[in-house]
Length: 302
Image 1 (cartoon, rainbow, N blue to C red):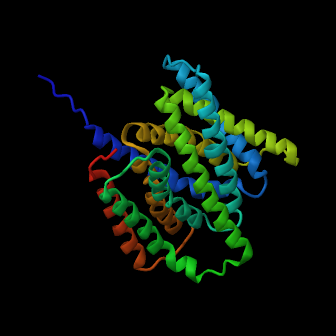
Image 2 (cartoon, one colour):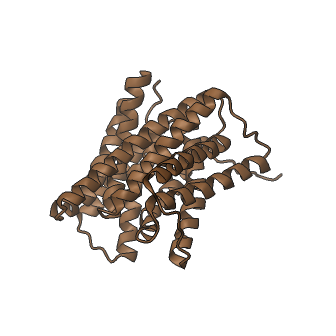
Image 3 (cartoon, rainbow, N blue to C red):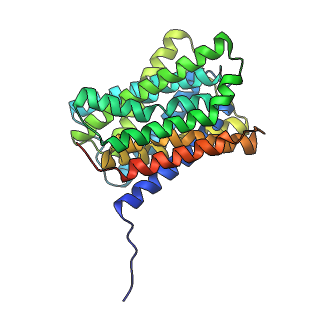
């Protein structure tokens, strides 16, 4: 008799959280290789344009229809313009002004943003444990980076960068809502994400044409390598897992990835950027992990 191991849905969810956190925790560093030569709008168009093509091909290869209803197209368009267009345009601009770790910290606020949004807009409720867990996660990333933020001489440009990063978090949170609405109307994750990215690219292309963006590309190994990593892993793999996780377990758990990615980004900074952190980093990491456990183990309330 052969034994077939079948992981539980919660084990799959936890694995999705870990994989997405590892990928997105490294994308903040990868984005820095995109800055300096190519206009940020053009880089985002190349990134999500390539990712969209790959997703459409995957959908066709797996026998999924890429046709959407009118309402699903509207949801995909809103999701794409907000989450893949506006959000990442703000992210790239923010990373040109402040360190990538600060942008990652700003995105940790999405766990609370999603809780508040779904509570206000859809009257959804979450267990008190979820709120506590999300709060612990946010507190953890503040503890990790608080010393860096307080000790840095940000200046006007840096403060603008923080505002841009928070604006990107708001745009992504709103994009999550429309992704949820579209999936509630029967839109599958793979074709829905492909269309959303395509709409985001179209929106940015229009902005680029109106603002005189130069549609160039840097053929250096660093730029091309980061572009492929951001497109395939950061966009196709991670977003697919993220949206599927949101559909199956809710966007509160899915968005908590945003509280874990700064921890990964901190490790990346230690290894590749020579950053040095104090004991507060360990304390913050413990808070983040404790919050993650609380969110996963919290009872489901609708």
